[in-house]
Every structure is written in structure tokens, then in C-alpha cells.
Image (cartoon, rainbow, N blue to C red):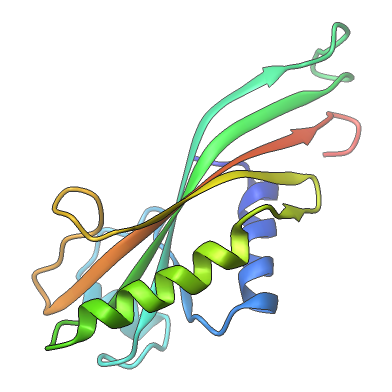
Amino acid sequence: MSSLAVRNLIKDFLYDESDETTIDLTGHFEDIRELLHEEEVQPDAPWLGLEFIAEGDEPISLTANNEQGLYREVGLVQLHICAVGRLGVGNELVERGDVLQKLFKGRRIGALVVESVRPINTGPGATLEFEAGYVSGTVTVAYHYDSSPQND
């Protein structure tokens, strides 16, 4: 799981720069309808599920320890673009995915650097799978985030 700092940077960025209704999917195992109700998202409204995946937090300065130095967190943010399944929804997912891809491409968000953004993938196993009548596609954002114990 990504650090709290990365999670907050991404969520704040999306809140400020996007019209998407976002839901942090961390630790949610209940029925999707319960989750949407809890987050006050209408059952037929489109939404964006966020999944954070850290791949490592490594020292990048010679003096790095628990009190000083510089560390680099590397990871992924999966943007699961969700909507109710119906005819034509695939085009809607691709259009929303394209907007999000362009929004993140080449960005620096505070100390977070977006390294790459993969276009939307709607294939089986590449995104969320639902039994509640929803469909989704996923845009994957690769990042690195530099921090130091003095600034955390």
C-alpha cells in the first residue's frame, strides 16, 4: 500500500482537477452497493475507484536512516473507471480513461513524479470485476515519491 502522503496527494489532485467521484477502495470488502451507499454515490452514477500499490521504499542517499536522508517510494495507482453496464458504456469508459490519462501524463504533484500512464484496459483480469451490474476499465499511473524522515 502506498504511503499516506502519496494517497493524500493523489486524492487531493483528483478532487481539485477532475469531475470524477472517487472512492478509495483500500480495505473495502463489503458488497459494492453498500460501499456506494456509504460513499453517497447513487447506484446508477459513474465513479472512480482508487487502488494504491507501493512497490518499494528505498534509501537514495548515503546517509539515509530513520532520522535523516532521502527515500524514494515507487508504486502504482490504479484508476478503476466504473459505470453501470449498458449498451455503449464501453465508449464512455474509454473517453473517461482518455481524460484521466491526459490529466496525469507528465505531471509532478508536489514531491510525486508521474513516470508513466498506461491507457485504459478493459480486458478480463486487468480491472475490477463485478456481479452487481457494473463494468470498469483501468488506467494505471506509475510514480515515484521522494521524502525524508525530517519532513514526514
